[in-house]
Image (cartoon, rainbow, N blue to C red):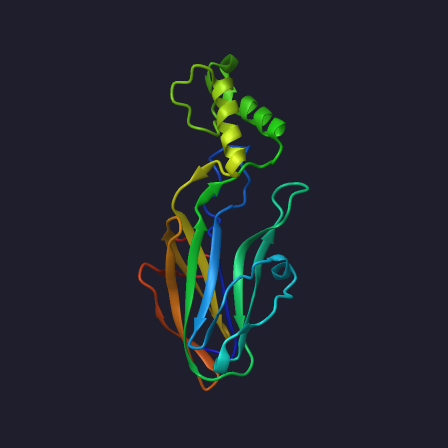
Length: 233
């Protein structure tokens, strides 16, 4: 089953975001996931200035005989008060007139951060870290530790250093990122999952347009399809 419109959206999966029981980290994944739509005569990806993606005003991507596509935000969050909004999911829309052909839907993991500080203010983070992590008079990590303390000489001292490092890179933890994509072709929506590592690029699917109708011709290696709303493996 296919249709005249293709929508591809991808971003970090919501499951397992942040650090367990740590109020210092946001509940929104900071992992940077890019989507790229590669057609026979052109491609579509995010522009240098992302502001247009917030209100769907980005210039169309020229795909030659295949027509044009648009890049935009598929999901926008503002996890930190008075901070800039985050484009969590990116989305590509391809509709309108154009020649038939096969295209590729790619995902790139640009940044593998899995937990980001809930505030950009050093004092706020240090207080949060100290209260949650440094129980027992500051002698050791508490039950809601945001960091892994390896036999600290002083939990408060280690907390200050670790939170300073986290703020410098706006990241508290890194690792493999589970990416969830939603691929809609007409009335059918398929959900795809893959676990990716830093700076990895992966083909999620290949799509074919015949007679103006899009269908999925194949999935990429390592990509698993799940039922809509089901957990990624």
